[in-house]
Amino acid sequence: MTIILKNKETLIYDDFNFKCCIGKRGLTKSKLEGDKRTPKGIFTLGPVFYRKDKYKNLETKLKKVPILKKMGWCDDPLHKKYNKLIRINKKFSYEKLYRHDYKYDLLIPINYNSKNIKPNLGSAIFIHLTKKFTPTLGCIALKKADFLILIKLINNKTKIKIL
Image (tube, rainbow, N blue to C red; front, side):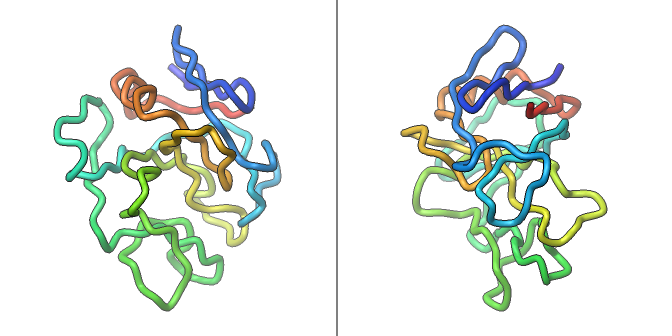
């Protein structure tokens, strides 16, 4: 099965419609680092990253990865680890995964620009949490209850189709 992002407000999986939000500047076929757009296309999904201190028993068929305090996602186009999970290092730019707010308490990386990675074409595109449906910097965000339902339904063969 495929998750479909039908428009800027609706993520569909099977018979489920989830309200969501996307990048502040909409969707694009030509994603660039920092453009605040969500990339169009069909993508595989990574594992569920989660805060172990907040979620004890996640029900999912996806691989689960606890978020540690030193985890980050490199968003520095000049670094060899661009668009990859990293151990935080102050010498280059990154998206911190262990945050004080709730947004990354649960997240799934969308495998965009993850094979044959091209610098400046975008990094750290996630499905993550939101409370107010404010636009993201390029990710897709869901309410916690919907995220928890979605991860029960999908598996490691599920893809996301962003129209």
